[in-house]
Amino acid sequence: MVRRTRFDDSDCPVARSVDAIGDWWSLLIVRDAFDGSRRFGEFQRSLGVAKNILTARLRALVAGGVLASVPASDGSAYREYVLTPKGKALFPVIVALRQWGEQNFFAPGEPHSQMVDHRQGHGLRALEVRSADGRRLNPDDITVHKVSTQ
Image 1 (cartoon, one colour):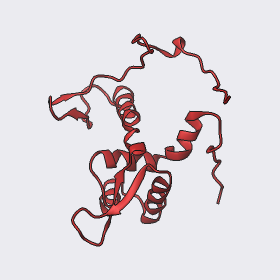
Image 2 (cartoon, helix red, strand yellow):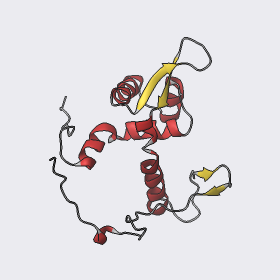
Image 3 (cartoon, one colour):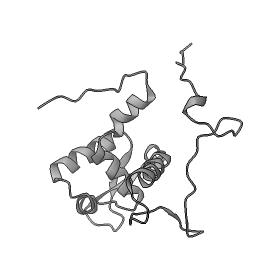
Image 4 (cartoon, helix red, strand yellow):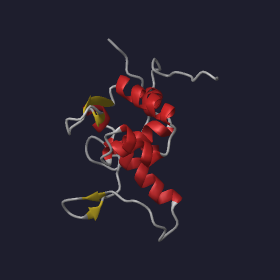
């Protein structure tokens, strides 16, 4: 088996993030958790993933602090997986991936899922990257600086 390259000690935040949740199964588990899945069987039915792969990804997400394994809310002997604050902080990432996918991988009029504001009943406005003073930014407007520890 090929060993996966680790990025958990990289000085790049993107690399560390990909190290924590970068494989497609982990991102889809997080998506399903936002959509209300909590139990192993719910994730397995939704994703159609092999049980050993799902077990490994759930363990990694729990170990990384993205999900927590808690007693079942119905008092049964089962465990449930809930998003932690770190996991909930992935919300804009999931929204951005959904919106990017809607823009780039669906033909006009092709059916797909959509996130809807349950209070208003409308789809979400496209995410935008803004400067500290509120200006909309695009890739040409930014540079990356290394943060020194002093």
